[in-house]
Image (tube, rainbow, N blue to C red; front, side, top):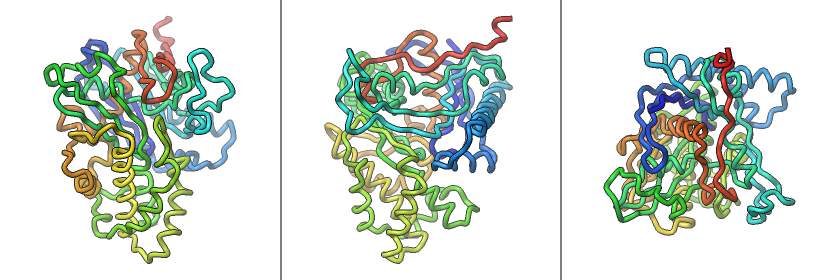
Length: 407
C-alpha cells in the first residue's frame, strides 16, 4: 500500500481538488481507498488572474513566473492540509492548473508513426502551472507533475488521461459504460461490456486495447459559468443545482446551429479547452441569442441544452453502440437540471453517478492523478494510445524529488 495525494484544478478554475488515497496493486488488480477529500477554493483575485490568462490576456514572463509560483504554493498548502490529521503521504501527483491547451493539429492527424512521430507535424502543446519542483520543496514529498507532455511528444492530444483509471476502477463485466465527466469541459470514457468475470474484478483492463475509448465532448460547465457571472454581474460563479436554467426554455434553433461547430463533428481522438469554449465563444452565443429575445434563464437553459446535445451527439456519432449505463462525475453532476435533461435525451440509458458506483464524483480526477503518479514511480505507462492518439504507451509525468531526502 502507498499513500498518495492527488491534486488538480480543472477548467472551471473553482479551486484545488485534493484527494488523500491509499493505492494498492498495479493495473489489473488496482484498488484505491479515499482517506480524505477536500476542495480548496482559489482567492477571488487569483481565480480572476487565472481565468484572464486562460482567455488569452497577455502577461510578461516575470508575471507568468509569479503566477506559476502562486499556484504551486496553493497546491502545496492543499497537500499539507489534506494530510494534516492523518499518516502522511509518500507521494504527490499534481496535475496543476491548465492555462493553455492546443491539441495536435487537425490537419496533421494520422501523420504520426512509431518510427517518426513528429515528422513535419504540428505538435500539440499543453501548459499546466504550479510547478512540481516547488511543491516537492515546500511539502517535503516527492511530486510527479507535468503529466501531459510525454503523451503529446508521442503524437497524442495529452488528453483525456483519466480513461485508463476509469477502466481500472469502474469497469463491470455485464454492461457497457460511459463515464461522463462534467467539469469546465466534458470528457467521456467508453468501457465495452466484457461479458466475463465478477463485478469489480478489473477484467476490463486485462487487455487495455480492447474497445476502451475516450475523448472530450465539448463544453460542460465553462459556458454556463460564464453566463451566470455575466447575468449576475459577477455576484455568482455557477448555477447551483441548475435552478436558474430550469426556469428558462431552451432555444432549439440555437442549439442546432451551435452543434455545427467544427469540433463536434471532428473524429476522435480529440480534446479541447477554454481556448475554444471560453469567453469569445460565449460572447458569440450571447450575440446570437439576442435575435431570439431570450431571457437570462432562457440563455442558461439553451447553453445547458448545448452541453446535453453535444454529449448525446458524441455518443450516437462516435461510439460503436450506446452504453447500457452512464456514470456522471465532476461539478456538473450536481446540476440537477443538467442531469435531468441528460436522462431525458439518453432514455432508456440509465444515468447515475460514479459515487453510486463507489468512486467520488468530486474527487475522481484527483484520485486519477494520484494513481498516475503511483504508476510513474513504478515505471508503468499511464496513457491509452487509442484515447489520446499517441503512437505508443509512455510514462507520464516528471518526478520531482525533494531536497529533504538528500540531506
